[in-house]
Image (tube, rainbow, N blue to C red):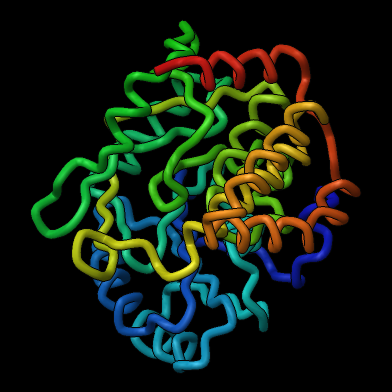
Length: 307
């Protein structure tokens, strides 16, 4: 257990009978009972029959009871508050599988994807996390992020299954469970919004590879026309980009980023909100500051300089 996971509510590990599966699924949700139940109908029919853990982040709509009644094989965790992305860490901590596939209440894995994930991780021992290709909506349109990850300026390392990346979609990734937990999982200071980048940096700093693997396919069906972001998300993303800089990047870089956001805030209300939110969380970020190793910082700079 790391310092970042020590404060999570206690939970008893999932215990499976029969042949041990290689991949388990962790899903997080909050106040989206019907959407979650529809997604679980798909997840529980996967041919791999993975164990599934649902972390209910403080729902008030009866989510936990509904899942237990309709899907008794699904493990439901109720930490009693909204853990944000840390709910994924909480769920992974109780799984007994070597690999953990992450989903949200509006995403699921294509049949066969988890079998391929087990094969990919077995063939690439340094792989800590695989970013999947994501298909969006009922028409299965490729997420634009797929092309961004495929064209990563970091290139492809010979011991990884695809291009090296320092970002991914949280509901479309598979992680080596021990590596994920040893890195601390998702950082509590960020809660939600662009939280994936910090995890990728921490895995890289620990010597693990993070790679885009389009052979793994996840489906995502967000609410709203075109999957419009939820209210306030853009400000949270900008807040967390700044906090990530203070947590891991050189002080000069973090200070310059803060100044840019402050200047933007003179005319941009979203930037002002992001900066105000970041200032409130800054003491906690500074207390947990751990600059990246030089080699990883160099990779971040190469990524920033790329197209």
